[in-house]
Structures are given as C-alpha cells and as structure tokens.
Image (cartoon, rainbow over all chains, first blue to last red; front, side, top):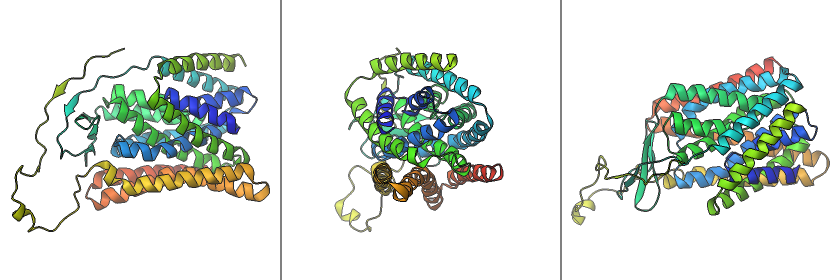
Length: 267
Length: 129
C-alpha cells in the first residue's frame, strides 16, 4: 500500500492530476470495494494538499478568497457525494469511477497552456490576492507579474459543486475538473488556478472524510501507508514537475486511465 | 496548443504609492509601521510555518502507524488521519479570523459559511449513521 500510494502520488503530481485518480481505480482493480477505496483516495488527496501548501504560499499563487468562495459549493457537493456513496451499489460505484477516469484522461490529454498577460512589475505593487475581491497579481520573474480577476462566479460555483460530488462518490480529488473550470470558465491564470485547486481539494477531502469517519469507513491500518506514501510521492512528483517537461507523462497517464476505465467497465 | 507571445502593458501607478524622492528627515518623524501591502510570503509566513509543522507531524505519525504494531500503530494512524483532515479546516478558520480582523468582513463570512457547510455535513452524517 505504501509503495502504491507513493508511486501513484508521484506520477499523479508529475502529470498534474493528483494521485487519487490513479490510486482508487488501481485499488478497485486489485479487488477492493469502491466504497472502501474512496476514503483512501481522499486521504491521499488531503495529504498532497497539505504538503504542497507551504511551497505554493511562498510562491504567492494561492488565491484564498477565490478558493474559499468556490469551496462552499464543492464541499456541499462532497458531503452529498460521500453520503450517496454509502448507499450506492458496487457496480454503480465502479462504473462511476470508470467515467471519472475517462474524464480525467480527457482533461490530462487535452490540457493546454493558457495565454496570460504579463506586465512590468513595479517595486511596491501589492503581490498575491487583492483584499476584498477575487482579483490579484502573481510574480513571474523579479521584473514581471501577471494580473487577473475571476469572472463568471455562478458558473464556476456550479462546476465546483459537480467536482465536489465526484470527490465524495469516487474518492478522486476532482482537481481535474476544478483547475480547467477555474481557468476556462472563470478566466484565472493556470498557475493560480492549479495552486488554488490544490488548496481547495484539501477542504473538499476533509468535508467528505469527516462523513466517512463518522460512518466508520476509514481503515486506520490502511490509512497510515497511504498518507506516508502520498506525502513522499507528492513531493517527489512536484520536484520532477519543476525540472522536467511533463507533456509526455500527461499523455501516457491519459492512455493508462482510458485502459483502467475500460477494465472497470468490463469488470 | 495556444501559444502566443505574452502581451505586455505598463501598469498604472499603484494607489497610495509613496513619492519617489521623500526627504530623509521627514521620514524619520514617523514611527515604523507594518506594511500591510507586503508580499504574500511575508503575510503568510506564520501559516507557512504551521503547515510545514503539520506536514511533518502527519508524516511521522503515518510512518509510526506503518511501523508500530498493535494499539500504538493504530493511535499513530489516527493522529495522522486527524492532522490531514483538520489542517485545511484550521487554515480556513485562520483565514476567517484574519480577514475579520483586517476589515474584510464579506470574505470572513464566506469562510465561516464554508465551515458551517462542513459542520452541517458532519451533523447529517451523525444522523444518518
């Protein structure tokens, strides 16, 4: 379990999807009930979010106000999904997981590098998020920065609630929905969208994990290796992502996820 | 892939920017104050430290949960799970207090609403257990 969590977290972080979307289908394919695999997937997500926090705060790319605002919808969806998953049958959960894997494959394979507007950075400009609004500016280099403002909030909230349901039911982070939605629907630069999503998936996971804990669905002897492996693997994946191009890994991940989804459907 | 060269524009001068050449003697008349417009790295320094500590605690507890047999291992695993679940919620609570203190009441209310959603989910889970 430790090695599996480490490997999936490292590959997931390197490919920009997170480890849970690989870990949960693999656990189901090895014979675990989807309802038991979902909490382990969310523990992996929460551990990854925790370990990435300090670095992303130092980079000034997390927009807390945007994250907290959109997370109200996502957490409600996650709680609903976690409650629903307790009542759903194994076949439904496995097929739902297959659909999630396909969606993640599409998100990974079709991901694009968005264009952003770079401005010269005055020495005393306020960096990071702007107080009292969903706007901000993040530094690119010592001389350049990217200003932004989130728009179409109602549409963003609707998509986030869907991502929350996916997290609660399938045990995947939903980050593969949240990041593209924040970028494409709300017009936030990819760097800020990815960091803010990493922050919010921790809250989504916590909301669903509390439900799982109260329902007695967290196996502690399996949780420990998942957390340890995810903390190590997530850090290693982020380290490699910063140094090597991840395009080939993303495409390979997409193919693997399509295969996993196919097996889940047939199973 | 949509890849075009980044467009550049010169930003407007930030509101409240200090005059370029203020006399040194005049500056000395004022007490030094904390610059609230400072970079996020400084603004969130305590949060960064706290998250780093929580990450280490979660990792050590998880490793202990893997290695220790019996109730010691179970207790260590429980600590790791608790830290991983509590950390993001503590972060939101921290933000709510921070925003309230600095006059950003609207987003403080949003943060409290988020915690209320999580709390409501917990109550529903207890009822439906």
